[in-house]
Length: 90
Image (cartoon, rainbow, N blue to C red; front, side):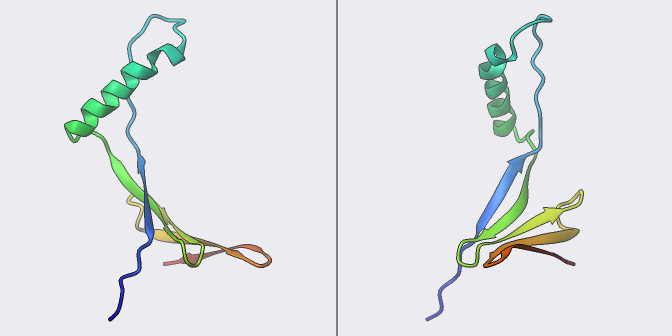
């Protein structure tokens, strides 16, 4: 019986929120409002989320998605005994 290999798919949020506040406001005091706005956008499907890389726990290799649609090319990183190796894969 064959088993399916699992890898890690890493996602990022590519949206931002703007919080109106008086000039000179310490941004640290706005983080709760910003978090609430992000939650609102997630719940209403207004946030943009993209897979930006995969990671293979067995081999230690990352496949980083490049380009505007994150699928045009990938850059492969992996640890070797002499350091990191990189290459393009189209």
